[in-house]
Length: 140
Image 1 (cartoon, rainbow, N blue to C red):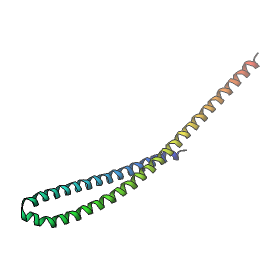
Image 2 (cartoon, helix red, strand yellow; image 1 turned 90 degrees about the vertical axis):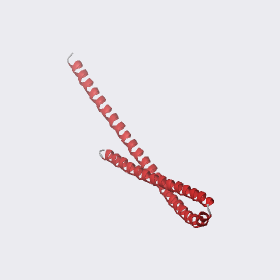
Image 3 (spheres, one colour; image 1 turned 30 degrees about the vertical axis):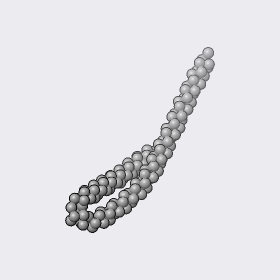
Image 4 (cartoon, one colour; image 1 turned 120 degrees about the vertical axis):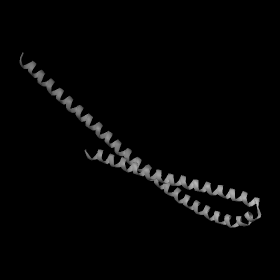
């Protein structure tokens, strides 16, 4: 069956594409985490400034509200990316299982072909032995 190697190549290609997509999602998740860390550092810095002078303390309230809004938006984006990553992992696992099924079918096909080849070789050897025995018996 010539279709099986083609199906395996397609399944490998699809699995690789899914893995690349998962890698892209993981990259986005890392970028979101970096943005969240940067925001937290910015908030801590602004808190230090607010503690040092009165004008900084008055301005900090507005900054804190804006920072909280930004943090919520980042957390929503992170939750979306987490869902996408989870769904992509499921697709990768499913594609991996499908590839393994196809590879196992290929192994079974190769085993059947090897057994059939061995059966043919044994039949040929039996036939040659029968012919040789007939010649040896007929000539005496």
